[in-house]
Length: 394
Image 1: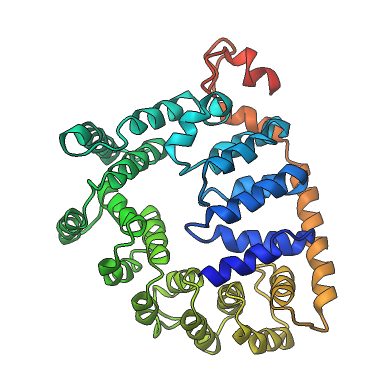
Image 2: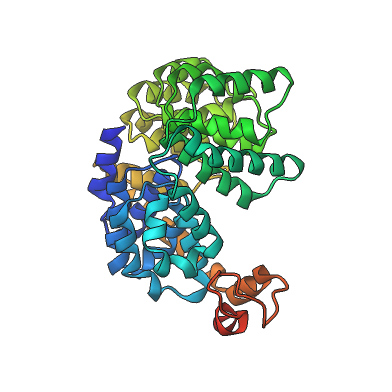
């Protein structure tokens, strides 16, 4: 995995827009990215307005430290109003201590309520036993509220509480095992169980690897599946890789298996993906496997790319021109179609940008405000009236 990130850092500073976007796309599919990569991007954003929206949109899962916040604050005030909401997305999973320390600067972007919760949880840092009991009580209350109706904001707050418990070493593997065993016997996982799956990845609990493979079959539960895939990738487990070695394109968990193998950056994962490709019978499946295999920058992809091009059939699930161009640039190989891929990828990107400009972004922002009255408190949490704050800019 370290070699993968070193390769990314070598090429991410490129001014080649196509290469940059493909590298950023590959990073965005990982559950976590080292803070060194995050801060490389923050420095780039300081000087390059053209990449800011992509970075804020795709890098929520990246690790962040105080340097990240300092670099971010150097340029976010330059963002157009309709893009400022992206900052909150980017700051997801930011350590509470930095949200609180820079609360005055970040309040407009993340809202007073989120800052309040971060501050409350931060007050429990370093505490254990009975002193941490209020966090457990609050966490349990959030889970109970979600039992009747799922709420994304409550779920995000529950993650903050869970992180606090894990840092205090009060969230134990033995309790996770009991909880999951009980709920699976009853046939389903609720939000408490799904959060326990999240903890498996965050705590890197390798003994749960086989269970994660089994849970990959639960493809009808979107939130559960997302947490299972993230946990499986975080473990970077050789056992998980081997468990997926014989999955066939016709199997129900094939799509999930490819996503996990894409995220586990090892030579064995590359070998398995390469072995899967000849078994694929439809173009869409072949594109999915090539997306995973090229993201490893494995040379095993070369003959399959040539065969794919020769056949000349495209499912259009991915921008294959961008994928192939970036892949060959990173592995530093030449190809007769390299410049053609680059030209077509640029044209596609320009067409997308033009179509995006036709969207009335201000109307979208106003629609998201719902029925907030002009004299109501602003939704950003600043304490000002809506008409004097975000409403004025909109």
